[in-house]
Length: 451
Image (spheres, one colour):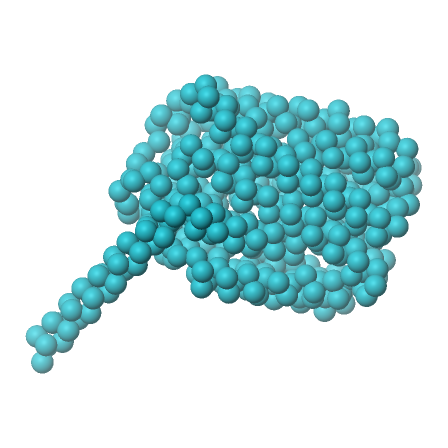
């Protein structure tokens, strides 16, 4: 009886191994078709748009939430940043570990479902604490979105096209801002802020179904024809990355870049409405379209230009120089928007340039991180980078900007937000220093990357 049981067990294991092998072969064949690769990239990008719609719609609803729940700018900064970032960064690491050893497609589909449900629950909040906890739940879902998606994109596109592909995926950031801002403005104008949360959550459920039933899990290392290896643990990946001086500086630079981006972007709708008196529908259209289109263009440009310059010169340091240049350019352009422009419409239009420059950094920084590691480290490496980016950038950027506005309010009144956002923008000087330090050693660290 025991012998028969052992034999059946062995046969079952063999059948499972054959099935898994055949699924990998079928997936590899599917991804040989460039149209399917771009279909998968398009679905993942749509998921990222949903991610940022649900994450960022709160910003255009800011004044309505502040008035209804009687909260301060600092508390709103916590809702738009810290509440989300705390759990997002905490769960990102274990979920990335899971993504490095299991089916990434399924993780993404489950994550989309969770963040969509939690976004809808934001509309049921009756006080600051309840909304904080609902936003906390949005972070639970969104923690499982990007690291597995980054890993899939790096597996299905060759290294020479990786930053460009990741820049297309990263368009979801500003696509989400565009859709969430314009849509949220209309929903709050004709309904209320609670209805807005429920409506923007609905598309995520349909995208989750697309991810689950259309995307095939690609073989690891497929794009480079590299042999799959056993995934290392979190501590080994962390030690491996932290041993690279370039990554230490790159991660801090990326985090500070996000600090400025979120510190300005999360308060820009409130700035236009409160400081310049723009009606909410105008805020939605002008800010949403300008920030969305400017960010979309800048994000694609950053990935495309870094690939182009690196391939043309043979120098991968361009993956750092592109974000460095954007950081310096954004400082005077942003100060003009906050301190010089006389009305909301001119301020919104002038914001196109700093938001265009601000979008250059994300894809090159993710691509650089993936160039530093082995194929089974990519999701974990993305999670570690995003841990720094979101804890410092999303967690602290909006919150500290909001508290600075509260501090300046007794002296400057509604202009307090103008000066708080300007001070946040100056953090770009610190950010540029870390990009420069990373550029000095990153070529040597690229050469040390394992299989």
